[in-house]
Image (cartoon, rainbow over all chains, first blue to last red):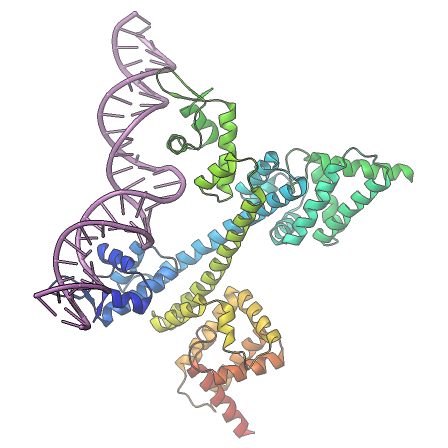
Length: 243
Length: 243
DNA sequence: ATTGAATCGCACGTTACGTGTTGTTTTATA
DNA sequence: TATAAAACAACACGTAACGTGCGATTCAAT
């Protein structure tokens, strides 16, 4: 028989928590002293351990009460629901991380808080990725869209950082001569990174480029907007002319 | 100028939410009608949009108030803190998913709820992975431990399912003759899967096996316990004898 | 018996609103 | 312009899982 304090020490849960579990009828002490102090026996301890296990799995106290009530309970179902929930939450956090990463980089390289980039980024991540890619439907095949989605998801922090760096570099130099040495270098850096990310898939890159040119409005790849695309276009046109 | 209802329609946030933001001083309407109805102007709308953006990023309303208060605010710091939080949460969910997956499989294949497996699994995931591997320190090199941690994290649902299946098969047949056809098949299936997971790294597999044999207590790889290890040992010894 | 520690029971605080009520203001219609 | 209908203000209570007190017992040790 344990007093509430002893049980607390034994299991590591606070007295208040045990108090609460008693209040909501989750764990009622099997007996009491004449004075009214709660006494917990081994069965109670076991029940507590099970409750803690289920809590670790992410169930709510009310659910735990139900699960422990009917032993015929649909355990598998409950756990698989939890699994689904955990997966959905992970998806959410993954996109949130991407968004935060993009915003963080944008502040870092632009040196100030740019609300329009923030709004665009968030808007981009708020709708589900399927919808975002719908815009590209006429330019890309199913296959290509899937590839892009994979890349998007697997883009590492380093990739993102490099990507932000080159793009903010370009943004800082939008007005320079497209035929200049520096412009050529910038465009080349962009191309290299793009190839790197798109894995040397020339066809995909080409189709992607077509899509980008035709969908200049809005932000399509995080912070890359119309201005950047047009800059790169100009540089390439200048290059062609030299030839 | 928008009434609270118009603003609600325009932005999609409920009237009650705007009400709340007014209450806590997050978004106060810039003017009111003679009768006391709230009127929001474009600046208020902008502030609301910013609030929503920050909320999307996961900030609390109180934090948002502070961030929007001092423009000199440490934006980058705040966002990077958020990023860290998101990452930690993802880590937590990843391990939780693994644990749930293990428990789900254990119920599926054992056909009943086995609390001791559940407790062991949870205990395994509650301490951080570093500590778990500390037990193996004397049997495995740094390199090997790192490899194992990677595998552990990347073990797919299918792998886990197969793993659970073979192990529960073995558990159902612990008492059969180690020299029998069936026992040999079971051990072989186990070996094949282990090789599959450990990527044909014979040395790693060997060292791992040593560790498993010496650390029979507790569960080391999810549901694989002492009994299973001893069974496989017996089968191999029987095989040796035949030779 | 006394005293210090443990415990009980109660209540308010937390977060970001949802839901509901009553009384007032605005808007639309006659 | 009178009146009905809609919108709104202001307040209160509920949510989930406890944390943090608080005064009033009760327990355990001396």
